[in-house]
Length: 310
Image 1 (spheres, rainbow, N blue to C red):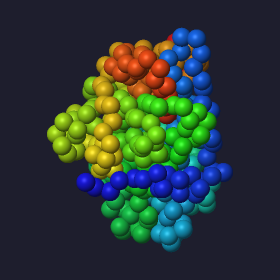
Image 2: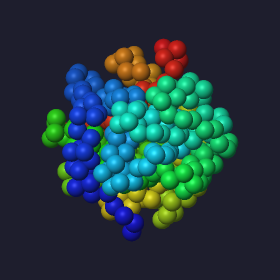
Image 3: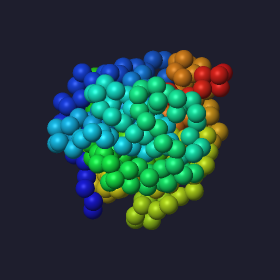
Image 4: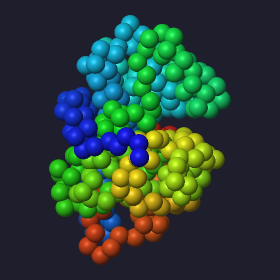
């Protein structure tokens, strides 16, 4: 089994990033509402990844990894935004490699935070290879979008918050792409709550890895692929499911779209499709809680076009 993120890693991350990130609200169930909602879409940059970005960069500063070239990351959008924001706040130079097809609106937001943006390749994997090469050539500290201990541990701090706010929660529902959020949350709640890992049928990296006994490449498509569209599960997430298997469920495109619509119509939460995927796991019945089970759904991102909400 590979390296496993521990709760100690998450607690160290919480100490390190304290005062740098928002403690996001926990919305309690009421009436027919099925679960608590962890409103992480209200985080800086509208995404949970800001936690891991601060933890990675602050750790790099502590460990003397940062030179004049600063930090480098490859991203299709959200991780780039998070690292650009963290770098601006910390006075660190940041270079973000994005695929050629990255939406211009996200590229402009990354640049607005002061980062250098380099377009490279037609998909994330090619941008990642270019970022790694840049790091070696320029001496920049590398930050992975999801499969790096400090990044995953930073993500796990949101689970510490939700259990601090409501210790009776016994199930945490998260969306999975490359698995950084899942790995961090699993570390934080291990022995205290179970994790339900929800993925789109169109990019099921964790589900396939659990079936195959190792991370495998999957085809990527669908409405949530802009944020959950990793081609392969990260090693940290695979190690996490070996340590304690989650409940792994898949949801349809239609279920994701409906969950996003419901988050908007019922709560006025402007969720991206990737974040609505976790809620879809509950609303669609893909996961059916037991009687008395106390469930929390993580709404992990809000980087969406509000014009598409209705």
